[in-house]
Image (tube, rainbow, N blue to C red):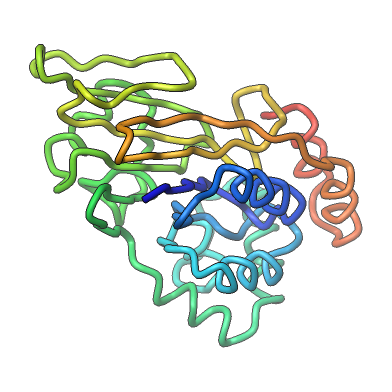
Amino acid sequence: MRYAILGDIHANKAALDAVLKDIAIAGVDRILSLGDVVGYGAAPQETIETLREIDAVVIRGNHDEACAGMVEPVFFNHNARAAALWTRNLLTPKEMDWIQNLPLTVDLDECSLAHGTYDHAQEFRYLTSVASAKGSLDSMPRPICFVGHTHLPLVVVQTEHAPEQLARPLATKIRLNDIRRAVINPGSVGQPRDEDSRAAWGLFLPDEATYELRRVEYDIEQEAHRIRAAGLPAFLADRLHLGI
């Protein structure tokens, strides 16, 4: 089985389309989405439709909940709040129902999925370091757990030869043979924040015991124009060029 791991698409259709082309080249069997399918971007309906068409496994993120009316975006910054309310007004009842029925976590045979941390999935905590990964490493039922939420690529591993020590490998491709447990964030498809404007996604090959972070160029200006044309905050368009 070959998995594509998609973090934080955020209604960026141009980025999603470019990633799906790369996924096709990689010969992926199944696509896993780590939540925050909508919010920020201007193509929420198209994004939902695409994920349903490709039969992706999708979990729910905090922006998904706000956009579907499950929570009020009172703690969002003003740009995020404006986008969430705009999206909420656009989605149909069926699209909202689809989001509302997404799970917070999923456990497949080879991996688990969560948006923030696995151990406190409903709270959408940020997993940004070795220390903040410990709770997920201790609680996840599979050796590998994929998370999103931060928009930043990150790998934290517990090895077989030194299980008491956690490590943070920096390579874009890592072997998982000697890994007892690992939490992996593939970055963001639709709004990268690591100062690399290219869309990010992860290629997970459990049979070969490898994980690879992949980056894809896409038409940023096309998506930025879509955001501006929708009347969303200009910053949400501008940041795509900067990768922040």
